[in-house]
Length: 191
Image (cartoon, rainbow, N blue to C red; front, side):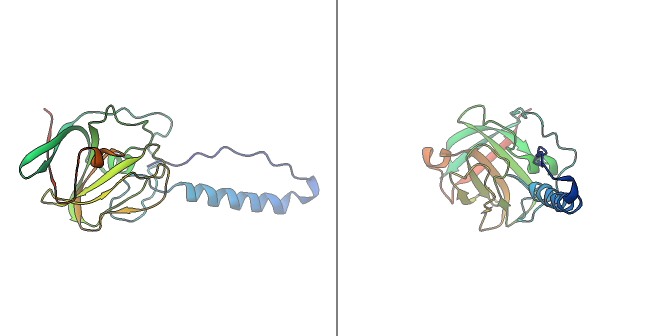
């Protein structure tokens, strides 16, 4: 998770009016910080807003680690194979593509693994790159594709149908490779 860091803004307040404006300013600042702690792309995956991960490092770019390969399959034939980083923990799923400039190349993606199949919801807050978000059922069938998502947006991108896996790829990937709802995915971890 990413907590947006706000720089204090200098405020000039005459001495005789200090008590009331400072209280108001304090309340506004607290409200802004609370609103800034919303979940970014990945989130809890269940459509609910998660609380910020206090241990998340928000000061550096996170490297992309190739941990597996994923194939998009139609009629038992692979249409395209990509390298994936696997987000299998709560913190990795919450972080997603936040603080990343993009993928290493156009045939890279991130695979989110969940313990169960249920409706999923992702958003792009604190995610600086446009994505295609591909929702996949427990039996590996693509149930929905959110194409060309908007960076830094708080719009919810929903699976529509229950999903156990989610694949994030660069925006335009699904159109460029003819990926469709009903296609399937197959993946494996690298050894």
